[in-house]
Amino acid sequence: MIQHHPGEELLLTLAAGRLESGPSVLIDAHVETCESCRVQWRHLQAIGGALIDEAEPALLKTDALSRTLARIDALAEACNPNENVQGAATTPHAVLPNGARLPRSLRGSTISRWHWMGPGMRWSRIELSHEPQASLFLLRIAPGRSLPIHSHSGVEFTQVLCGSFDDGRAVFGPGDFDAADSGVHHQPIVCKGSDCVCLAYVSAPLKFDSKLAAFIGQRIGL
Ligand SMILES: [Zn+2]
Image (cartoon, rainbow, N blue to C red; front, side, top):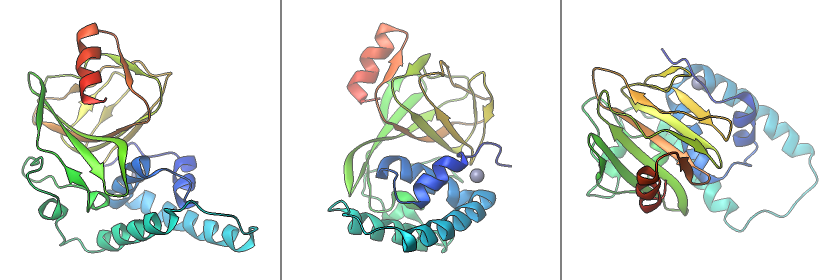
């Protein structure tokens, strides 16, 4: 049961085509798994289409068409539950635990193998074909392990692919979405049972309390 969703403002920004590719991938990944957000998303898209019809013509970014086509491909694939993105990703790539699969919005991305980050903690870098500089990661953390305590200089979006974590604000399980900003100072701890794999996006580097964590975070680009 999905408990945590992107806010309506985020969905509306996405529907209006005003969200960068990095965060869009996270929201698309959530919408793929969440029926209620999918319904809301379609509704907002219809509103967005009506607004565009009435809007004054404006110049688009040069990559607007390729980004739109990539989004349309991802949405079309979301309608085909038998398609396996993991098999389509560039190899070698991070392998997920049994039962978990990569969101379709990652199709065409380059996904690195798992890298060691600390005891029980691994990370994988994701490069989007149309926006490779976006800070997107997979994080795989073992039960009982935690990310070092940190706050944020920008926004951090997290979509849980499998397992769950508790950061003191709430427990986030499979399919849940979290948005954290400079007002959130937290330490996500993975719940008992199984590894937790999350798709994460940061708009700016995290601010770790510990110097060692800050050093490791800087090397990773987190
Ligand atoms: Zn949702």
